[in-house]
Image (cartoon, rainbow, N blue to C red; front, side, top):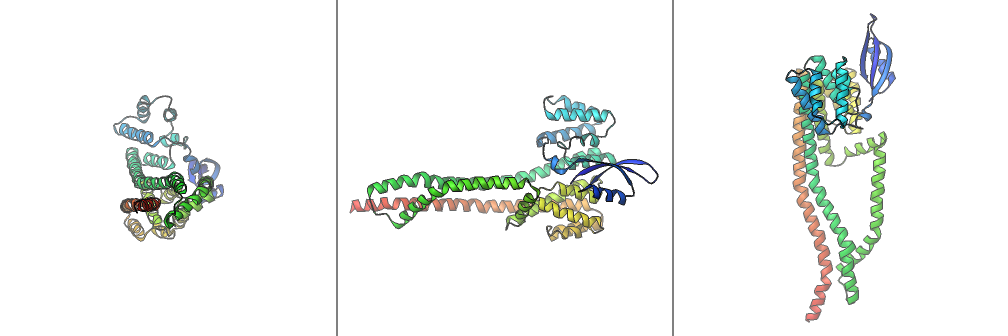
Length: 400
């Protein structure tokens, strides 16, 4: 969703500079009019698609945020805090030039968030919104700390998912590689020996040799199909409709989709909580959250829920309309709305579904690993037995 700088005038004639999130300039005009302002000028700052193009790597980003938090907490003025951070950085790194530019802007009177807005390719929209909320509320230190905690929890969850996926993928890759090796090298060599010996082969061995002949013909086409499929998927992923189609499919895969939805719900709750804690209005917070979602289909449904909230519906009721949120999550969010503790309830939702995802991944890993090993042993065992049966027959004949 585009992010716009707007120059507006109040009825009294006072001019202000405001920022709005919207899908089009027409929607901006409606929002400005709804707020009771006269639109004088409008400039698109950036879109969410540009945010992902270039950023600090995660370690640099978290280190920068942690150092900034510690120095400001210690009482250092913002400009001096940035100077201290710059002293430790190599001048050739891109991060040095960005921070130096921010330092100069702040020295000239810009706020930290305004200076960071010039580098949307480096600073995520969520982070800038968090900093801006801290500046407005006079609690920048707390907001920087909250964001650090948010990022660490998000990264920890991502690492757990990757870790749970790596071993099964490695085992599956070994199985595929072993089968290819057997069918392209081992079995053909045995086949030559049997042809030269001119012996009658058991039916199991004959079937295996025929399968080998078919496999040798099919393999090049199979590899080509995989490469073309990979290229095709990558291309359609770069289009909005293609990404929407793929992401929607991810939400419908049996069993896997349940774990994936729980992960998206957890990520949504944690992100929305981090923004709401900063004092950002709920509608704006929802727009930001929907734009930073990693799943396009999930994001589009969140945008529809956001419009329902704009129309005056409760958050829990609006999210229920998406058919993506489990009843437990909706009950907790509804409870938070009723008691005025929405951010706390969102944290509870994130924690609850984090645990569900971790437990599900642990169970899958525990079941899949031995299952793959059994499959590998079964396949290799069948091939070995089929190839050695003629040898046993020959040995029996010689012994007789």
